[in-house]
Image (cartoon, rainbow over the protein chains, first blue to last red):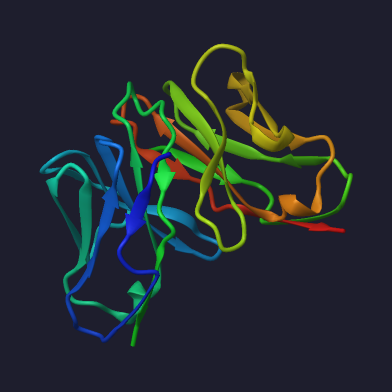
Length: 115
Length: 114
């Protein structure tokens, strides 16, 4: 069974800090994703990566960056955390397939609070 | 740009009632369609998917969905809900020509009363 592991379930940081959220998948999936989930707004795509060192902006990339140095690991970076980045962050992975015809596998999420 | 609209934000049903959750998408090209479910305290998981063939697809736990291309719709149905179906449901679209980028709807919270 696919396992997507996010490094923290809960995280509290201060405004202005640089924050790293880590995600590891164990199924050799090519594609990885970072979303934020807010009540009433569903899941919004921040960044995705379709291969090592490849990344593409999603719908809300401002204030975030990502790193994918190894296939199994996809990191989300908040360059200078702000209170409006308080949210639930979800990582997902998916096999490479034609036009994304494979489902995504999600981690448990990281609930990040910025004080 | 692709978008997904889920019409019902919160649905409350009694056990054994029938369920239909609406999902419409906006995209002119070929798409792959998914329904995901998030049970309380758990991660999102796949309920069912469509990418070709029979437009009526069956998923886990008695759920099914019908893809109607002319209506850009992919509605989720279950003939008789159970208390354990209480969860949040998300419709998602992957546009095949857009590197399979995924767009999710805002979600529908289903509460089933025992």
